Image (cartoon, rainbow, N blue to C red):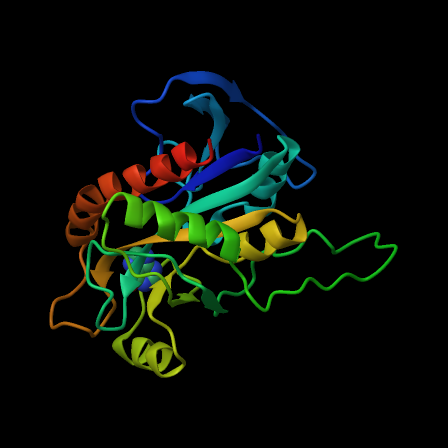
Amino acid sequence: MSKIAIIGGSGLTELPGLEIINKIELDTPWGKPSAPITVTKVNGIEVLFLPRHGNPHTIPPHKVNYRANLWALNENNISEIIAVNAVGGITEALTPCRIVIPDQLIDYSHSRADSFHEENLSEVKHIDFTHPYSNTLRQKLIDAAADTKLDIVSTGTYAVTQGPRLETAAEVKRLESDGNDIVGMTSMPEASLARELDIDYACCALVVNWAAGKTDDIITMEIIENNLKEGLGKIQSLISTVIKNKQ
Ligand code: HPA
C-alpha cells in the first residue's frame, strides 16, 4: 500500500486524535525541514505529517525551506501528498470557510529556492507542469467530499503571492482579471518540487478570508483564525475519508 503524506498549513500543526508511531528528525542536502515528520497510522495505513510552518507555527511562507520539506518526505517513500493551504477568496463562490481543490495555479512568488536541479547537473531537466496538481489525487479528494456530503468547490486557480503581507485591493483586482479564484502564499514552489520528485501532489485549500478589497472590512488575524477554527474540522474529515478510501 502506498504511503501518503499531509503537509499542514496555517492552523494545522498536528493531526489530532491520531496515534503517533514515530517522529523522524532528518537533515537533507537542502537543510532541515520545518519540523520532525510525524508518522501515524490510520486504519492500518501509514500517514506522514509535516507542518509547513513548524510546530509551533513560526516560519512565514517566504521563509519555508520547501526543498528540505519535500526532500525529507520523499526520503520516506511516500507517493502522494495532500497539502493543506489557507487562502483568501477572490471569486464569488469562494466564500470564507469553503474548501476548494484547485486545478491550476499562477505563480507570483519570487526569490524562493524553487528547484532541485540547480548545481552539478549532468543534464538540464524541465518538468511538465501543464497540470500542476495531480488529477488522480484531486479526484480522490473530490470523491471523499461527495462521500461525506461536504459541499466543496472542485476546481479553481490559485494565485501564489510572495507575502508575508497580504495584497492591495488593486493587486487582487489584477489577480482576478488574470483568472485566479483564490490567493495564498504557499502552493509554490511546493507543487513544482513535488513534480520534480514525481510525487502525486494535490492542494486542499480552505478559504479563511475574503481577499483584499472584496469587502469593506480590513483583514484581521482574528477573522482568519476564526474561519480557520471553523473550517479545519471539515479538512480533517475530508483527509481521513481519502485515507479510509485507500483500503
Ligand atoms: N492573501 C494571501 N494569502 C492568504 C490570504 C490572502 O488573502 N489569506 C490566507 N492566506
